[in-house]
Image (cartoon, rainbow, N blue to C red; front, side, top):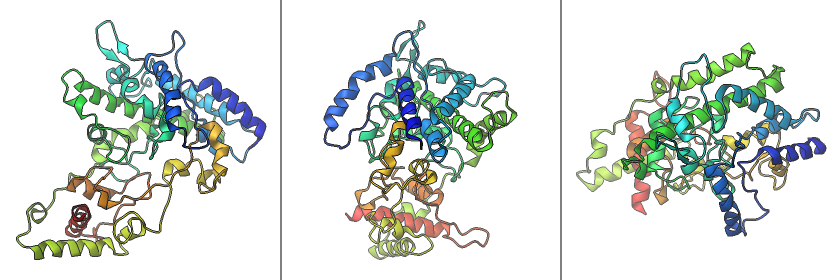
Length: 419
């Protein structure tokens, strides 16, 4: 990429990145100092910055990944145009709105409560719920670039890609409201994502959970439309105008996918009677474990490839998640190279980190440790990560039967109990 263009973009980003309060240093030795540096700016994020509104950060990283081989295209300029187009439809950070002409897929009353600075309106209704609870990690734009984001592993979720890991729908489908609600209430064990169960159990703040579910969907839809606009302009030369028919189609497509989320969900799995009943003797217990172990080690499931022979997460296959591949591999950058990724640092890239397979002995399951949740992770995979779905034996296709899948779940859960 043209170094002068990169410098120009860096200057431009300095002007528009009002919600990115913190930049990573070369090492991790100054963690405490960096947190101290970030905390004063949190006040700006929470209460706003006076009469001048904060702005959504344009998705310059996505534009930069698509223009890496095109020295004549300025990613910041393209990203700003896409951001302006998206604002015409979805409004600003402090004054969001729903695109006219489309049936509301989210409750805008909830979106308005979550948006803007923290405070209470004249009617005493609290506002700025997202900024109050989520901005530290996820950033104002929902881009996963909050003030402490680069200190965390895994990094906070970037909602703009529209990809969510822990859901009850297949890869390529959107999560339901219930999926997002579950993540907020349960948190993601083993990560920095906390449980907000206390809010749900509080009479005063119980509505916060429901409103955040709506706002996360809103940020994801807005972010997807922005990304599609960038790609359309760069790959097909379509002008970034709200009246452009192709852009109208994209808007409808993105919203439509979320609209179909409830019907895409997998029926809630129910463990068989033998799974929920204590084995009558040790022999039966060992039999189920042995059967599950054989599935775990089979070529059909390929669990050992990533999780290792003993389920310790030390398999030979190590890979990156789709959020990282989006701006590295797809842009011709080797994420394993120690310095190549830094080319994208001015545009908002964080150091590539491998997506680590779960160590089952720890007993910490990101998507939940109940038998039903583990079953869903196995059957549906974890979207955006190297974890694929295990094939089910359906319509004469090779795969595991439901009985065999539950045996596999039993074995995985046994690994924690055993240690």
